[in-house]
Structures are given as structure tokens and as C-alpha cells.
Length: 191
Image (cartoon, rainbow, N blue to C red; front, side, top):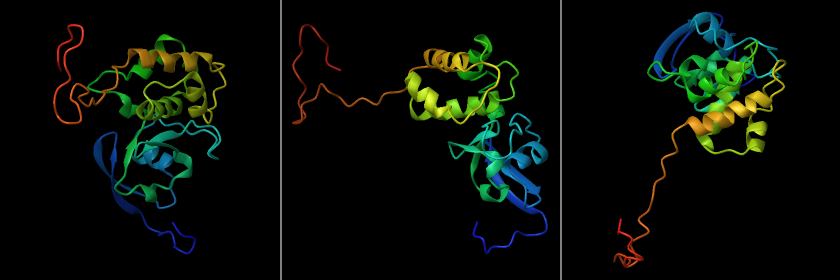
């Protein structure tokens, strides 16, 4: 939004997708996405933290990318896809990250957990087999005062093992560039 654009004084009405469902919402134009989610859409899983973009408690996915919802105006979300911690479940089942966090004690007080979960999901969506260093880097903007982080890193790694392997699109290596199949080797069947 440009500096010269005036913020409307009356409520704005917009449509977006929230946790896979269409949502139409009316709210005061000065509200952040965090406030819209919690106050207008009744999705309290996203937490108020520092409200300065420093703690990560308010992280959500916006068009698949983790953002700090305290720094995004609700006005900016017209027609966009928002995923909160409530949207991580699928057909009534917890996401593997949620299961692993519960099983391994990665959530203690739980206040930071929603932001960490959606941030970790974004990492796994773009990199299904991250290294410990990649996990640390991805979660470096999420502050946790309770766990010491080790349980969090271990839970993300456990979720990787519990998740179904990524679908690999295979080109048929058994076909030579001229279109003819390779000969069988050592009793291998052609695919």
C-alpha cells in the first residue's frame, strides 16, 4: 500500500481463503491480519506476541509463505490464501508436525507453538528432507522461552520420518534417447 493512499474510515469487506475455505470478512481497515484472524474470523490459534515482528508467535502462511501476521494489514489479503495452525489438520487428523510436537514435548507452555508449526510446515513443503541446520535457520525467527529448542528440532525431524515420502516424478530411465528400451541387465525387468 503506498504512503499516499488513504486508509478508508469505514469497514472494508474482502474475500480470501482461510484454511482452505472461502471467507468473507468485514473489518476496520487499520486491523492487521493477526487481528482479523483472531477477532473477526474467530481463529485464536495465531497468537499475539510482541506485535513488533520479533517473536514469530503470530506466524501464518500467506500464499504458502510464512509471514508475521502482526505486520500484514488485513487489507493486503484480498483474494489470498491464509493458513493458520487450525488449518494444519486434514480430515480430522493432526498434521505429523502436531503429533510429533505433542509426543516429544516440543510444546511446553504452547504460546509459540502455532507460529513454529506453520513455519516448519512451510519448510517441509519446500524442502521435504531438511538438515538440522536448515530447520534451525527456518525457525530462527520463532522465539521459545520454554523448550531450549532441542525438542522442537527433534520434533520436526520426527515429523519428517512420519510423513509420507515426497512424490518423485520419474522420467523413464529405461528408454534411450532414441526411444528404444534399454536391454535388461542382470535379470532386471523393464519399467
